[in-house]
Image (cartoon, rainbow, N blue to C red):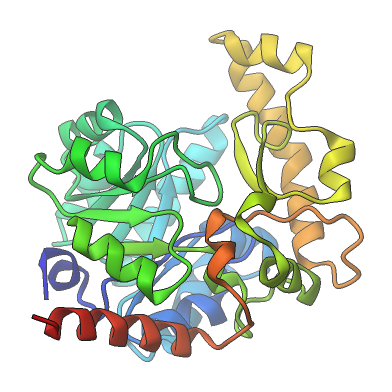
Length: 328
Protein backbone atom coordinates (compact mmCIF):
# COMPACT_ATOMS: atom_id res chain seq x y z
CA UNK A 1 0.00 0.00 0.00
CA UNK A 2 1.19 3.54 -0.76
CA UNK A 3 -0.24 7.01 -0.27
CA UNK A 4 -2.22 6.81 -3.50
CA UNK A 5 -3.94 3.48 -2.78
CA UNK A 6 -4.49 4.41 0.89
CA UNK A 7 -6.21 7.73 0.19
CA UNK A 8 -8.17 6.38 -2.79
CA UNK A 9 -9.27 3.36 -0.72
CA UNK A 10 -8.22 0.80 -3.35
CA UNK A 11 -6.12 -2.36 -3.54
CA UNK A 12 -4.49 -2.07 -6.97
CA UNK A 13 -2.69 1.19 -7.93
CA UNK A 14 -4.45 1.40 -11.28
CA UNK A 15 -6.91 3.96 -12.64
CA UNK A 16 -9.34 3.50 -15.51
CA UNK A 17 -9.07 7.02 -16.87
CA UNK A 18 -12.13 9.08 -17.74
CA UNK A 19 -12.90 8.78 -21.45
CA UNK A 20 -15.33 10.58 -23.70
CA UNK A 21 -17.40 8.76 -24.89
CA UNK A 22 -16.23 5.38 -23.54
CA UNK A 23 -16.74 5.74 -19.77
CA UNK A 24 -20.05 3.93 -19.32
CA UNK A 25 -21.21 2.75 -15.86
CA UNK A 26 -20.58 -0.93 -16.60
CA UNK A 27 -16.90 -0.30 -17.38
CA UNK A 28 -16.24 2.12 -14.53
CA UNK A 29 -18.00 -0.18 -12.06
CA UNK A 30 -16.19 -3.31 -13.25
CA UNK A 31 -12.75 -1.75 -12.81
CA UNK A 32 -13.54 -0.58 -9.28
CA UNK A 33 -15.13 -3.90 -8.37
CA UNK A 34 -11.87 -5.61 -9.38
CA UNK A 35 -9.89 -3.56 -6.85
CA UNK A 36 -8.61 -0.65 -8.97
CA UNK A 37 -10.59 2.57 -9.47
CA UNK A 38 -12.82 3.61 -12.37
CA UNK A 39 -13.41 7.29 -13.10
CA UNK A 40 -16.78 8.70 -14.12
CA UNK A 41 -16.72 11.13 -17.04
CA UNK A 42 -19.86 13.26 -16.52
CA UNK A 43 -20.58 14.13 -20.15
CA UNK A 44 -20.22 10.48 -21.15
CA UNK A 45 -22.52 9.41 -18.34
CA UNK A 46 -25.25 11.90 -19.25
CA UNK A 47 -24.97 12.96 -22.90
CA UNK A 48 -23.60 9.73 -24.38
CA UNK A 49 -25.13 7.01 -22.22
CA UNK A 50 -28.31 8.84 -21.26
CA UNK A 51 -28.26 8.68 -17.47
CA UNK A 52 -29.48 11.27 -15.02
CA UNK A 53 -26.22 12.22 -13.32
CA UNK A 54 -27.16 11.29 -9.75
CA UNK A 55 -28.91 8.07 -10.78
CA UNK A 56 -25.98 7.20 -13.03
CA UNK A 57 -23.56 7.61 -10.13
CA UNK A 58 -25.67 5.35 -7.98
CA UNK A 59 -25.84 2.72 -10.73
CA UNK A 60 -22.06 2.85 -11.15
CA UNK A 61 -21.55 2.48 -7.40
CA UNK A 62 -23.81 -0.59 -7.34
CA UNK A 63 -21.86 -2.12 -10.21
CA UNK A 64 -18.67 -1.39 -8.27
CA UNK A 65 -19.97 -3.48 -5.40
CA UNK A 66 -19.68 -0.57 -2.99
CA UNK A 67 -15.98 -0.06 -3.73
CA UNK A 68 -14.71 3.47 -4.50
CA UNK A 69 -15.26 5.14 -7.84
CA UNK A 70 -13.88 8.52 -8.87
CA UNK A 71 -14.99 11.47 -10.98
CA UNK A 72 -13.28 13.64 -13.57
CA UNK A 73 -13.90 17.39 -13.44
CA UNK A 74 -12.90 19.47 -16.45
CA UNK A 75 -12.03 22.86 -14.96
CA UNK A 76 -11.35 25.13 -17.90
CA UNK A 77 -14.44 25.49 -20.01
CA UNK A 78 -15.40 27.30 -23.17
CA UNK A 79 -18.74 28.32 -21.67
CA UNK A 80 -20.12 29.55 -18.36
CA UNK A 81 -23.06 27.17 -18.66
CA UNK A 82 -20.75 24.15 -18.82
CA UNK A 83 -18.76 25.41 -15.81
CA UNK A 84 -21.95 25.82 -13.79
CA UNK A 85 -23.01 22.32 -14.77
CA UNK A 86 -19.62 20.95 -13.67
CA UNK A 87 -19.93 22.69 -10.29
CA UNK A 88 -23.32 21.04 -9.81
CA UNK A 89 -21.95 17.65 -10.85
CA UNK A 90 -19.08 17.90 -8.35
CA UNK A 91 -21.51 18.85 -5.57
CA UNK A 92 -23.78 15.91 -6.41
CA UNK A 93 -20.80 13.53 -6.53
CA UNK A 94 -19.67 14.68 -3.08
CA UNK A 95 -23.22 14.19 -1.77
CA UNK A 96 -23.21 10.66 -3.21
CA UNK A 97 -20.03 9.75 -1.36
CA UNK A 98 -17.38 10.09 -4.07
CA UNK A 99 -14.06 11.02 -2.49
CA UNK A 100 -11.55 10.70 -5.35
CA UNK A 101 -11.49 13.34 -8.08
CA UNK A 102 -9.27 13.97 -11.09
CA UNK A 103 -9.23 17.51 -12.48
CA UNK A 104 -8.13 18.61 -15.94
CA UNK A 105 -7.01 22.04 -17.20
CA UNK A 106 -7.33 25.34 -15.37
CA UNK A 107 -7.04 26.02 -11.65
CA UNK A 108 -8.74 23.31 -9.59
CA UNK A 109 -8.91 25.24 -6.31
CA UNK A 110 -12.71 25.29 -6.15
CA UNK A 111 -12.82 21.50 -6.56
CA UNK A 112 -10.13 21.04 -3.89
CA UNK A 113 -12.04 23.24 -1.46
CA UNK A 114 -15.29 21.29 -1.89
CA UNK A 115 -13.65 17.86 -1.79
CA UNK A 116 -11.25 18.54 1.08
CA UNK A 117 -14.12 19.56 3.33
CA UNK A 118 -15.37 15.96 3.27
CA UNK A 119 -11.96 14.30 3.51
CA UNK A 120 -11.57 13.55 -0.20
CA UNK A 121 -8.57 13.92 -2.48
CA UNK A 122 -7.99 15.63 -5.83
CA UNK A 123 -5.39 14.60 -8.42
CA UNK A 124 -4.63 16.94 -11.31
CA UNK A 125 -3.67 16.14 -14.92
CA UNK A 126 -0.34 17.74 -15.90
CA UNK A 127 2.07 17.49 -18.82
CA UNK A 128 4.98 19.47 -17.38
CA UNK A 129 6.31 21.09 -14.21
CA UNK A 130 4.78 24.56 -14.62
CA UNK A 131 1.25 23.07 -14.67
CA UNK A 132 2.12 20.82 -11.74
CA UNK A 133 3.15 23.84 -9.68
CA UNK A 134 -0.09 25.64 -10.51
CA UNK A 135 -2.02 22.57 -9.43
CA UNK A 136 -0.13 22.38 -6.17
CA UNK A 137 -0.82 26.08 -5.56
CA UNK A 138 -4.49 25.13 -5.66
CA UNK A 139 -3.92 22.41 -3.06
CA UNK A 140 -4.18 19.22 -5.13
CA UNK A 141 -3.11 16.03 -3.37
CA UNK A 142 -1.47 14.23 -6.30
CA UNK A 143 -0.61 14.54 -9.98
CA UNK A 144 -1.49 12.53 -13.08
CA UNK A 145 1.65 12.82 -15.23
CA UNK A 146 0.40 12.61 -18.84
CA UNK A 147 3.22 11.57 -21.15
CA UNK A 148 3.69 11.53 -24.91
CA UNK A 149 2.40 7.96 -25.32
CA UNK A 150 -1.02 8.75 -23.83
CA UNK A 151 -4.34 8.65 -25.60
CA UNK A 152 -6.55 11.73 -25.61
CA UNK A 153 -4.55 14.94 -25.24
CA UNK A 154 -1.04 13.53 -24.89
CA UNK A 155 1.82 15.48 -23.37
CA UNK A 156 5.14 16.23 -25.09
CA UNK A 157 7.47 14.39 -22.67
CA UNK A 158 8.34 10.80 -21.82
CA UNK A 159 7.41 9.03 -18.59
CA UNK A 160 11.09 9.05 -17.60
CA UNK A 161 11.50 12.79 -18.13
CA UNK A 162 8.29 13.54 -16.21
CA UNK A 163 9.29 11.51 -13.15
CA UNK A 164 12.61 13.39 -13.07
CA UNK A 165 10.83 16.71 -13.50
CA UNK A 166 8.10 16.14 -10.91
CA UNK A 167 9.63 13.66 -8.49
CA UNK A 168 10.74 16.29 -5.96
CA UNK A 169 7.28 17.84 -5.48
CA UNK A 170 6.32 15.66 -2.52
CA UNK A 171 3.01 14.31 -3.80
CA UNK A 172 2.06 10.96 -5.39
CA UNK A 173 2.62 10.76 -9.14
CA UNK A 174 0.54 8.59 -11.47
CA UNK A 175 1.91 7.54 -14.87
CA UNK A 176 -0.57 8.15 -17.70
CA UNK A 177 0.33 6.95 -21.16
CA UNK A 178 1.77 3.87 -22.80
CA UNK A 179 0.57 1.33 -20.22
CA UNK A 180 -0.55 -1.59 -22.38
CA UNK A 181 0.99 -4.62 -20.68
CA UNK A 182 1.72 -5.75 -17.10
CA UNK A 183 5.39 -5.17 -17.88
CA UNK A 184 4.65 -1.53 -18.74
CA UNK A 185 2.83 -1.21 -15.42
CA UNK A 186 5.72 -2.70 -13.43
CA UNK A 187 8.18 -0.47 -15.28
CA UNK A 188 6.21 2.64 -14.29
CA UNK A 189 6.15 1.57 -10.64
CA UNK A 190 9.90 0.91 -10.69
CA UNK A 191 10.49 4.40 -12.12
CA UNK A 192 8.91 5.79 -8.94
CA UNK A 193 5.28 6.32 -9.90
CA UNK A 194 2.76 5.28 -7.23
CA UNK A 195 0.31 4.03 -9.83
CA UNK A 196 -0.73 4.13 -13.46
CA UNK A 197 -3.71 5.36 -15.43
CA UNK A 198 -4.97 3.43 -18.46
CA UNK A 199 -7.69 4.25 -20.93
CA UNK A 200 -7.12 2.53 -24.25
CA UNK A 201 -6.72 -0.95 -22.75
CA UNK A 202 -10.06 -0.66 -20.96
CA UNK A 203 -11.85 0.27 -24.20
CA UNK A 204 -10.98 -3.22 -25.46
CA UNK A 205 -13.24 -4.92 -22.89
CA UNK A 206 -16.73 -6.44 -23.05
CA UNK A 207 -17.91 -3.97 -20.40
CA UNK A 208 -17.09 -0.92 -22.54
CA UNK A 209 -19.96 0.09 -24.82
CA UNK A 210 -17.65 1.19 -27.63
CA UNK A 211 -18.37 -0.56 -30.91
CA UNK A 212 -16.79 -3.89 -31.82
CA UNK A 213 -15.22 -2.09 -34.80
CA UNK A 214 -13.47 0.33 -32.43
CA UNK A 215 -12.24 -2.49 -30.20
CA UNK A 216 -10.98 -4.48 -33.20
CA UNK A 217 -9.09 -1.40 -34.42
CA UNK A 218 -7.31 -1.15 -31.05
CA UNK A 219 -6.38 -4.84 -31.14
CA UNK A 220 -5.03 -4.51 -34.72
CA UNK A 221 -3.15 -1.27 -34.23
CA UNK A 222 0.56 -0.85 -33.63
CA UNK A 223 2.30 2.06 -31.96
CA UNK A 224 3.10 3.67 -35.30
CA UNK A 225 -0.59 3.79 -36.18
CA UNK A 226 -1.24 6.45 -33.51
CA UNK A 227 -1.15 10.02 -34.83
CA UNK A 228 -1.97 13.43 -33.36
CA UNK A 229 -4.84 15.39 -34.91
CA UNK A 230 -5.54 19.07 -34.28
CA UNK A 231 -8.82 18.97 -36.20
CA UNK A 232 -10.95 17.47 -33.43
CA UNK A 233 -10.49 19.77 -30.41
CA UNK A 234 -7.93 22.30 -31.63
CA UNK A 235 -5.23 20.62 -29.52
CA UNK A 236 -3.21 17.54 -30.55
CA UNK A 237 -5.42 14.51 -29.89
CA UNK A 238 -4.14 10.92 -30.21
CA UNK A 239 -6.19 8.85 -32.68
CA UNK A 240 -5.74 5.70 -34.74
CA UNK A 241 -4.65 6.54 -38.26
CA UNK A 242 -7.34 5.40 -40.68
CA UNK A 243 -8.40 6.40 -44.21
CA UNK A 244 -11.03 8.66 -42.63
CA UNK A 245 -8.37 10.47 -40.57
CA UNK A 246 -6.12 10.77 -43.65
CA UNK A 247 -8.94 12.41 -45.61
CA UNK A 248 -9.67 14.78 -42.72
CA UNK A 249 -6.01 15.78 -42.28
CA UNK A 250 -4.15 16.32 -39.03
CA UNK A 251 -3.56 20.08 -38.93
CA UNK A 252 -6.11 22.73 -38.01
CA UNK A 253 -7.04 25.00 -40.92
CA UNK A 254 -5.60 28.53 -41.25
CA UNK A 255 -8.71 30.26 -39.85
CA UNK A 256 -8.92 27.87 -36.89
CA UNK A 257 -5.21 28.37 -36.09
CA UNK A 258 -5.67 32.14 -36.19
CA UNK A 259 -8.68 31.98 -33.87
CA UNK A 260 -6.94 29.62 -31.44
CA UNK A 261 -4.10 32.13 -31.02
CA UNK A 262 -6.41 34.93 -29.92
CA UNK A 263 -7.42 35.30 -26.27
CA UNK A 264 -11.10 35.91 -27.05
CA UNK A 265 -11.44 34.04 -30.33
CA UNK A 266 -9.85 30.94 -28.77
CA UNK A 267 -12.94 30.40 -26.62
CA UNK A 268 -15.26 30.74 -29.62
CA UNK A 269 -13.16 28.30 -31.65
CA UNK A 270 -13.25 25.75 -28.85
CA UNK A 271 -17.03 26.05 -28.68
CA UNK A 272 -17.20 25.38 -32.42
CA UNK A 273 -14.92 22.36 -32.08
CA UNK A 274 -16.88 21.04 -29.08
CA UNK A 275 -20.21 21.30 -30.89
CA UNK A 276 -18.87 19.63 -33.99
CA UNK A 277 -16.57 16.95 -32.56
CA UNK A 278 -18.77 15.95 -29.61
CA UNK A 279 -21.42 14.46 -31.88
CA UNK A 280 -18.90 13.04 -34.33
CA UNK A 281 -16.84 11.22 -31.69
CA UNK A 282 -19.97 9.87 -30.03
CA UNK A 283 -21.39 8.51 -33.29
CA UNK A 284 -18.09 7.08 -34.50
CA UNK A 285 -17.22 5.36 -31.22
CA UNK A 286 -20.59 3.65 -30.84
CA UNK A 287 -21.27 2.92 -34.52
CA UNK A 288 -21.07 -0.84 -35.11
CA UNK A 289 -20.75 -0.27 -38.86
CA UNK A 290 -17.39 1.41 -38.25
CA UNK A 291 -17.88 3.72 -41.23
CA UNK A 292 -16.26 6.82 -39.77
CA UNK A 293 -13.07 5.17 -38.43
CA UNK A 294 -12.70 8.05 -35.98
CA UNK A 295 -11.20 6.41 -32.91
CA UNK A 296 -9.13 7.81 -30.05
CA UNK A 297 -6.33 5.64 -28.65
CA UNK A 298 -2.84 5.89 -27.19
CA UNK A 299 0.41 4.14 -28.06
CA UNK A 300 -0.33 1.39 -25.55
CA UNK A 301 -2.15 -0.31 -28.45
CA UNK A 302 1.21 -2.01 -29.10
CA UNK A 303 0.59 -4.30 -26.12
CA UNK A 304 -3.14 -4.99 -26.59
CA UNK A 305 -3.84 -8.18 -28.50
CA UNK A 306 -7.35 -9.21 -27.47
CA UNK A 307 -10.62 -8.03 -26.00
CA UNK A 308 -10.78 -9.28 -22.40
CA UNK A 309 -12.85 -8.54 -19.27
CA UNK A 310 -11.82 -5.53 -17.19
CA UNK A 311 -11.49 -7.75 -14.12
CA UNK A 312 -8.96 -9.98 -15.90
CA UNK A 313 -6.87 -6.95 -16.88
CA UNK A 314 -6.80 -5.64 -13.32
CA UNK A 315 -5.90 -9.05 -11.91
CA UNK A 316 -3.08 -9.62 -14.42
CA UNK A 317 -1.57 -6.22 -13.73
CA UNK A 318 -1.91 -6.67 -9.96
CA UNK A 319 -0.24 -10.08 -10.10
CA UNK A 320 2.67 -8.70 -12.12
CA UNK A 321 3.21 -5.87 -9.64
CA UNK A 322 3.05 -8.28 -6.71
CA UNK A 323 5.53 -10.65 -8.38
CA UNK A 324 7.95 -7.80 -9.12
CA UNK A 325 7.87 -6.72 -5.46
CA UNK A 326 8.71 -10.24 -4.33
CA UNK A 327 11.79 -10.54 -6.56
CA UNK A 328 15.01 -9.70 -4.64
